[in-house]
Image 1 (cartoon, one colour):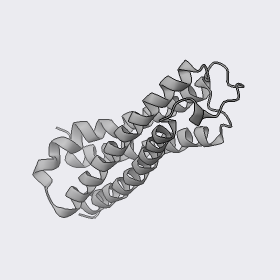
Image 2 (cartoon, helix red, strand yellow):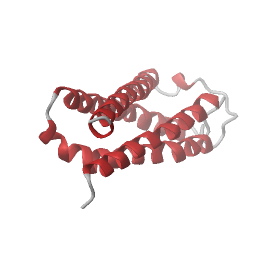
Image 3 (cartoon, helix red, strand yellow):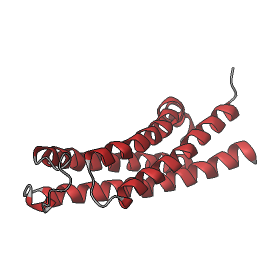
Length: 160
């Protein structure tokens, strides 16, 4: 049987390993002057592995153990992580609609086409707002949950 310490170490390493994927994925979008379909796909090639690295330990190890560890720091860690995923879901409600409208306008196939994106649909600015709030919120809450998770890991498995 694998010890809790070994599993906790693997979980901490997987979640921590997702950080460079998130950072590089974000850099791709920040650095792009125009977000073409190729840029978006390249961005997702880093974001999706980051999400997988982060979500596997959450679903397979953290959530099943949560009810046995209801103490202050653990509950706060879980709430921060839950809030991060809620904001990610909120961001997805914006990005799906943006992708549909941009695809219908052929903006991914013809990146040189000059169009004010807010003129493509009356709700575009609201969808872009959802995307921004969701992504930035996810990153902030993910980072807070990650720091608290490292604090818990060190306190329980390294020092404790």
